[in-house]
Length: 95
Image (cartoon, rainbow, N blue to C red; front, side, top):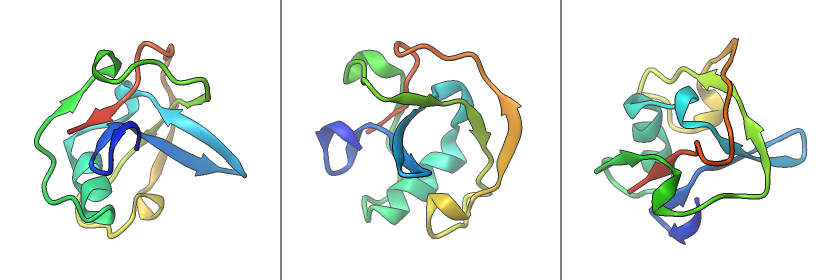
């Protein structure tokens, strides 16, 4: 999580040696539960858009993350081949 604290901020994931910001169209409450558990932050309180933290300068992760909610880490979640149109204004933030 970038631009906030240990348990809030813009979500970035490492993919092929590159940090990528996760698009909020590709992220939901079950995905947030996995990230919060992985970071030892308890249950997610709110899932917000980017206005709360600001834009990133990384590439966008546009594929849909499809966690069931019981995974221990986000990289264990399946990923859909569906890609979403995202801008840097459309980033995922966890609080």
